[in-house]
Length: 246
Ligand SMILES: [Zn+2]
Ligand SMILES: [Zn+2]
Image 1 (cartoon, protein in one colour):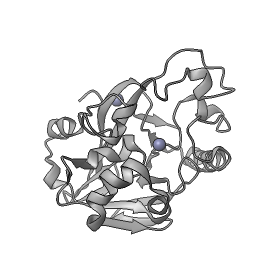
Image 2: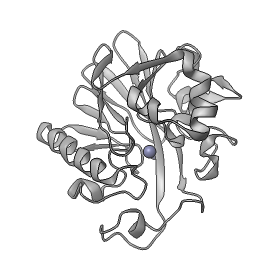
Image 3: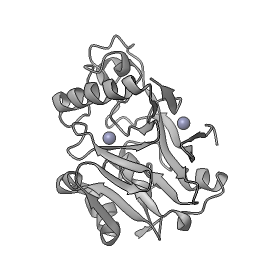
Image 4: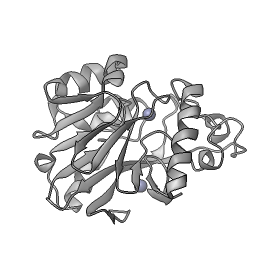
């Protein structure tokens, strides 16, 4: 359990560090290429892969993202598999069967793959919250090996929705068509809205693997401006430190 939890509005927010490592050679590029115009060095990028556990006062357990999955997961072509999400959950005293709701910020393989192991849902009693636009755009191994396995448990939303009392999702498109962020109190779990701290100072700095770089930059600027005005805490997927107060 390398990262510490925080409490907000009666909800304990625990970062789960699923993996740390560089991307594999299939898609790895130096930081300077991943974030063109950022001034970052021509060096490899070592990312953390974070999921978040929310435990509210009523004991409800919600998981935000499911990480990179096992040795054979759809993320194995590029991410440092296997992820250790279930070990991180165990360290927090939680079994997968206790999770009531899983929010998938989007259907990239490093966020959705941990939902399935050996062809079966890992969180056997959970519903899986995903945006309609994300589902519509899903294809490839994530669709075939992940979405198809959890399809009877999907809770499909469009736009903004309260998915558990006190927990809201919000559509934040660009990185993917149906990318969503999650709010609880003044904490925002931002998925892949931002990938590197350099984008906080300048949201115009694009990430090489945003689906739609222009929409992603516009969404990033809008959402960060709103969160910044609130002095909200962002809980990021890929920064080295999970929490950062704007
Ligand atoms: Zn971490
Ligand atoms: Zn992504």
